[in-house]
Amino acid sequence: MNAGLRPHSFRGCEFLRGPRRFTELRDVLPGISRRTLTSRVRQFEAHDIVIGTA
Image (cartoon, rainbow, N blue to C red; front, side, top):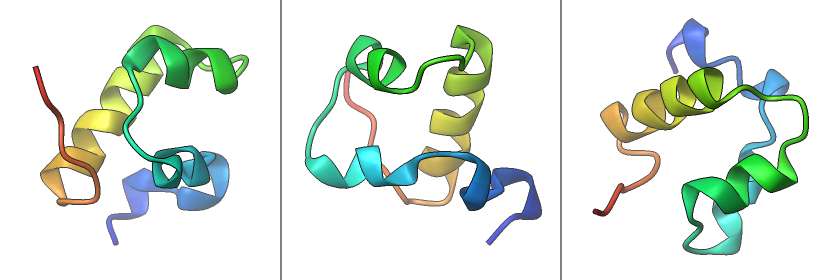
């Protein structure tokens, strides 16, 4: 896994709970900025960890 993802610093388990909207993730991850969450989600998509939909 890419060291930039640092899974220990991100509550990745929230992705295992099924489909989530961006705002739902932001709500359950207090303190994370929109920019950081966007970056992490894009990294997860790039590594096929999550699938983004429009």
